[in-house]
Image 1 (cartoon, helix red, strand yellow):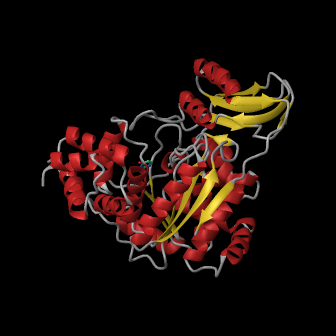
Image 2: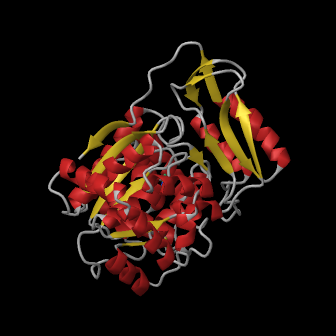
Length: 434
Ligand code: URA
């Protein structure tokens, strides 16, 4: 095969067959195809697209480029949940223990945060001593005994995606639907779950800003997973304002614990219940969504899920004391309110900017490997639709650096739009593809 001919074929809108896609993916991963040719191919895909079959072939080729996790030693149907990333999205921290307490085996591979959205591992490292370096034996033993374990993605999980994603990042080829869908799904398929519930975010703080694009991405990923024999569902959920109130690693852990204690924000609890209900039905622990919801509300409200959270944190090096007393988690030195300069109603929160303010304070990383400050971030006091009086606090900033705090305050004021008339609040759940 000849890479130049394949690039020209794609540039002219032709379709690549399974063998050609596999040749490109494996050749690029092995270093036999240079970056400049792969970049040209990715750009050609951006311009002329890929059909369903090509997208599936690309996904499967990237999935098999490295290790395929064997979870067969874990009892029961393994159901994974994946979010496309948002601001204040701490659902995994609640869903993991909740699903586990309801009997669903949760064998989760997670990543670190990059850009304005946070990563679950970073958040969990707010617990002193928590680690994700479990041996495969320990990982399986933990899922079989307490129903939950979370590991970092191994270096050899879909290495083709790792290399292609890094190239996309620097060649302006990230935002193509088939490339995004295949990138996410290659890692999910390699992680070995029997079923996957996708939480596809839509809105200002999400990767996909429009409902139309979010639906198309969800449909594409559901299709790929189904073709690969996985039990798939997708929820399109709103990310036009942060989920819950807390944004920042330790602050989000505290909010997740509050939710497990029955004192969390309503939107977070609702999204958790919707996503986990789908997982529970797929795992065969309830006959339908209604039954699953009743089971989960009881599991949450009785404290069983909180108990599993403690067992999970202890099993991975932390202490139950920090779950019982979240004030022991990392705390920033300064906490300052940002107050509204006029009265009215909150009509919009520029959500991506809220994520960037958290990054500015030190809570996120601009590039892989950057250190992060687990204690900083912000806690919103007002959300879209809320009335606000001049001088009332919009949010509390948690910072360790006065200069950054001053800039964050200025930017936060601009991130809130306050108008005389209220606006209709967008729904939390836009659609469920089941
Ligand atoms: N997340 C991924 O893993 N891949 C993409 O292409 C986009 C988001």
